[in-house]
Length: 327
Image: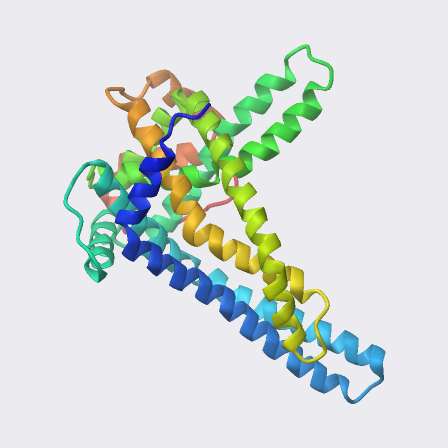
């Protein structure tokens, strides 16, 4: 089946409890922000609707909620780099320390220590964000290999099957970019671009093992996420009921927000801990394969960009993030 230890991953989460609490505060705070701003928009729309008939009130209430939701979404778009830098990369840093058996600070000191490690490896938020976007692009290219292999097989319906499998794997590999960042932190390299390049080559030459485990984790994580969504429908409906005009679409939207918060705060770090176990165990004693290096360079423009920055070394650490268009 899978090659990770669920008990080992849960143990890592327990030992990083300060970070789990921090993640919960951040992600549930974001969900609450969406609800409050959306609720404010609903209230304003409902008030404006008082100047018209019932149909006008229903329409203005809906658009008030939609505008509030969109405005808060725009704010979150601008702070996404900070969340990646402080929350996600920080938690990866302490998980790496656990895997290597190094002493772990407790309490708030764990978060402070992680922030120092991340800052040492990635001087600025835009550097880490640019690196993460390039890594995601290369991972997408590797995942596309599976679709390419299936489409040339003489199997009836192979193209349709390949499309479905590719869509599933794109979801499944959503956690792997943080495992690649974990390698950059673990190697303690001063050239984060070069470390990520090597990590991607190692991932590519072991893609069958990694994709298999990522697929199992996608089933586990999104299955649990769906259960959370169903459980959260009732409290979400209550929140909507308390809003003026009882915004009809709000129940499903807020239940999705609650489920997303649980996934981001609890389920994602579990999946990352599992994949880190598999990745570091699989690549132990391996060196990046030049053939895979050449293959990735041929198939992915983002790998070529990453490789160019790796060859630039430390000079690229403070450089502009550049063009991050899809490969």
